[in-house]
Amino acid sequence: MNGSPPTSRTRVKRLPDRGHYDPETIHAILDAAVYCHIGYVIDGKPYVTPTSFWRDGDRVYWHGSSASRMLEHLAEGPEICFTVTHIDGFVLARSGFHHSMNYRSVMAFGRAEKVADDSLKRAALDGFIERLFPGRTRELRAATVQELKATLLLSMDLREASAKIRTGPPKDDEEDYASPVWAGVLPVHPACGEPIPDARLTPGTALPAYLESFAFARKS
Amino acid sequence: MNGSPPTSRTRVKRLPDRGHYDPETIHAILDAAVYCHIGYVIDGKPYVTPTSFWRDGDRVYWHGSSASRMLEHLAEGPEICFTVTHIDGFVLARSGFHHSMNYRSVMAFGRAEKVADDSLKRAALDGFIERLFPGRTRELRAATVQELKATLLLSMDLREASAKIRTGPPKDDEEDYASPVWAGVLPVHPACGEPIPDARLTPGTALPAYLESFAFARKS
Image 1: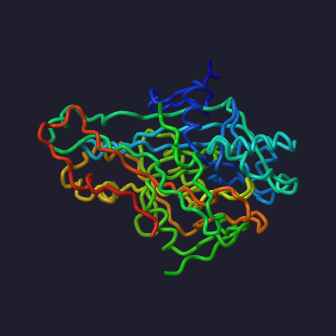
Image 2 (image 1 turned 180 degrees about the vertical axis):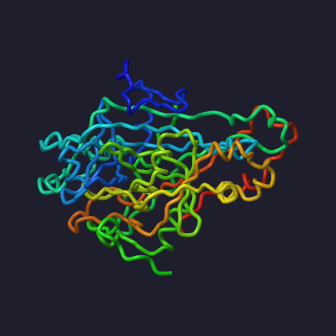
Image 3 (image 1 turned 90 degrees about the vertical axis):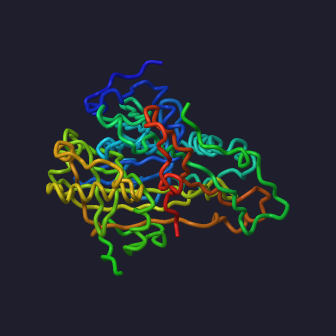
């Protein structure tokens, strides 16, 4: 798969070795995430809003209440900056200066488009739940027309996107390697606790298999 | 401790019960985090950059290379939006519509200020490492004057900040509570793996106590 060449906005300028522009890398980082930060400008001022999202093909999708002023604003198609970040580890070097973090991030620029068609909306929203919890939409009642109307669904293409990745051990100054201080990486990852059943759960309801086996996507 | 009253930017309009404006709540969310997303505007377009940060009193601090164009731009004092987000759980409701996430987030607006004084810079950078790894700065060599010069340190006050929090079980439509589908919360939290010693570690170097006991701050 070939990516688009980086633009002046997406090219990683400092530490260019950390920049990646191929869709496989970008998609893998997006698919390992469950939320993003969306940046936008209102009256010349910056706003950054966290929201859950999902990828399908070369587009990302996010949704919320039709009453959300943020989503209404984005639906008008202003330029946005879509960012996803995973922290993978603390990098402990032999000097404070070379301490760092291992991370994977994606930054994409574009404009949101509203998905207005009810059947496309229904399929996309179901796809979001299925991506996390395969099989769950067959257990749930279908969304009502009122619920679809109350939901604003936006999407954006990934034409102008780049990834930035740091992995591996600390990079110390040569003369510091003789230091007796501990150096290395403390890995970090998201984890799940035990599912908490709702107090009003219908008695006898078993924990579904997709919750027993739930795992965040891992870096390949 | 009394917080500032919310401004038109920080007041949580939709779902106002989720809005919090007291410094205790805001500080606890910031202190449980190791990175933020900073939004800013260049030529009318939005940019969102993830970066590690720390809080000291009523200010947040972040740093990077003096050669970073992003940091250089922020040091000029444009308006920024500083956002921190924790995902605490997937909320599985009895309808797709009421699925949600439990989360804690902080959004703060302001302008960055450059910390130029070398001794303040040194103390702040040491404070960042100590906050994560108490005792480590006594093991590391001191930063050199060149390293301080190569580091740009910025800070911003938290005068215009708000928190947004969702906790607890799904809130279903009354008629859906009879549904046999599993409903509840799948908790999510950050976790650490086993520390990975650097390949060039001085033989015999023990794992420091602050890595044996490392834990992300937890929601109180």
